[in-house]
Image (cartoon, rainbow, N blue to C red; front, side, top):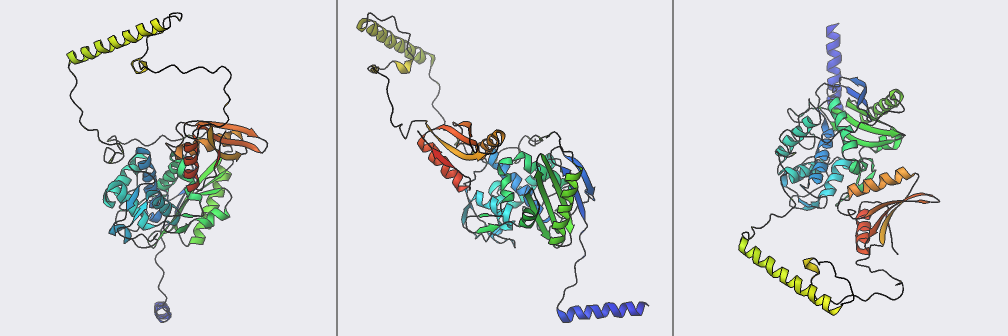
Length: 448
């Protein structure tokens, strides 16, 4: 009996050698979790706390910190990033970055999220923290702040490394935080393809995005040690489900299993539930990056002159008082029939002739293109008033600084509700539309 088994095994080995077939690797352990994203309630779990290799699910944390760094002012989306030899040498999947080249930070984010590019992930980490090792330490600190208690990161991309481990529970938690902590950036995970600066990239998760109704992200992962991993999110009506798979046997098996888990989630989740949005993470040391923001976008103020003496301040005040008195006297002498004018502010005490008042209502036929605030930007029509308001809010958050002075308006039209930013100058509106167009956001400028 044993001799027969030995001969069978030997023949199989010889056949593999002759045909050039490699023996399959030991299957990675399977783990899964399903969560109601609105409440954080776990609807299903299996081996959810087993520490396993996360593979490119790691990039979810890399991207979470990238969004956090933009929010904290550590780096801007259009900041040029110089690519190191270390980042350029990362193995596939890659964007194809070259050592010494520069690329905008937003393109690195797209490449890591959509293409799962290892070189882009490493470049993100180095741009924020100076080195990949320092960035990995920040990733682990952030994981603890988010409640990911059994996760430790060693790199920014997820290639197998000693001690680089996570769990299905922790990655599900991270997927939920990605949805609610940075909704202004979350749409990037649903893009089937996008421009990454040096190439057009296609989404590694497009099979599920195309096949499952309501799917809008989040991240795939694969290494030989990890198997086929995926964290997926889908929304149907008011319900949002997040499902996670570790250790899939193949990409097709993983995709089929994740869709089954999402179905299970929608079946078990209540149709109505309160959305318990988690607060942004707080760090014990008071800062996300080693206790403080590493780099500030504000210039360091130059040392100013010493404070003036009390005698000098008194002399200046006396001189200003004399000037104001002279102006008041002159005004009262020149226009005796008018009542006494109120004491002007110092900046108003200039000898400027009064502006003549128009004798008839002034008709403006064309507003100034520089100072008039009669221009604005339309983002198109939405099916409901609430949807239009949400679109305006998401856009304002995604373009901080662009719409700070604009007024958000929802105008009911025959075809729906138009989302508008109003009260802008022509220059501001034109620049805003250009920025939105660069992000493939529908935009139309309007004016008087």
